[in-house]
Length: 104
Image (cartoon, rainbow, N blue to C red):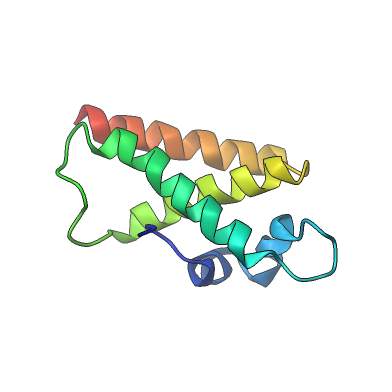
């Protein structure tokens, strides 16, 4: 189970945020790619969280949803070759927060 959903992405950043998942450029995001990116982001997060917490988490705090979205959007943007400095900054910020969580 992912820590975030496509609905979380649009709630946080708007529908246009999913344009990074429009790999075939038909105007519609590839929702399977979005789901995969969110699942992979969750896995990346769990490498940090497992150092301090028993997984799976019983509930996902909202700040972890935000981190999952930022990681997933960065990965999607990279795969579409449209990653911006903002995508990279959010990704790096997410990893920094996760590292602090893991270190206690």
